[in-house]
Length: 280
Image 1 (cartoon, rainbow, N blue to C red):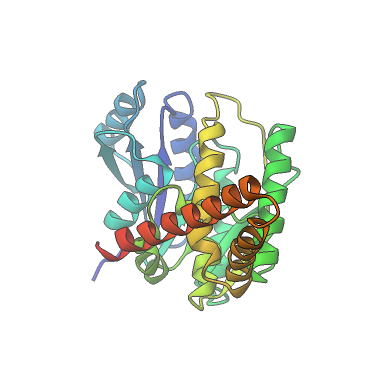
Image 2 (image 1 turned 120 degrees about the vertical axis):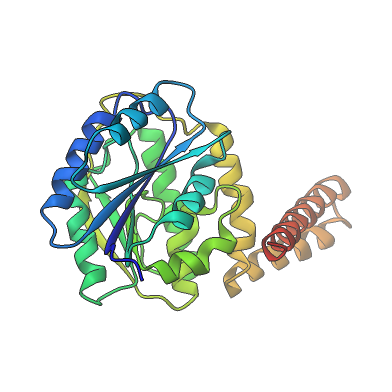
């Protein structure tokens, strides 16, 4: 049995500028905890100097155990988290982003909620978001939609900073496809695990740049379909759309045909996702 109590998993892509400060602050934060720790950095096919920075860290003595996982090509945050979960050895997992917008110093707040037995997953809830107005608005719409769909009262489902038990990560591995990382808290809750939110400060990104473009929002919408079908409200929405489309064919064939094709297409996406998930 591993003696590691805590594993911090950090997926990153082109974070050369942030890595030295991130590592120094992580080490200090973990040093204040009375538990053996490890850091698992997952390089998601970076094209800048991230790999060189990781090698420099590994070549020097460290007060905590450090692992580096190098993915040969970019797999996205979901794939990077999956790779990190696969090698982590701790009794508690923590995930956090490399952009330093959620300060590493807040990690003990989340870890304590798991270590005390209060919850199986602790999700950071970013206060006073330091992002663009569009991203903040999109996030609020996404979280409101998830609360309506699932009935689970979470305000920041997609925050990258979380603490969870390894058995939760293992159960979620089958869902780690596409960009499904954003849905992990609600999926864990659907599986019966206890979820809590922990309000944390949020600071502006000082180095590097965000890489969440329009394609990420499209993928989030596509991923929403298989997730929505885990709740009865999701089934009602898609069945209602299909019924309305069929009925409208009589009065407006073009609009009805488009709606019906839309509903069938998204259902096909859900079926393909489930087939891929269950084949692994």
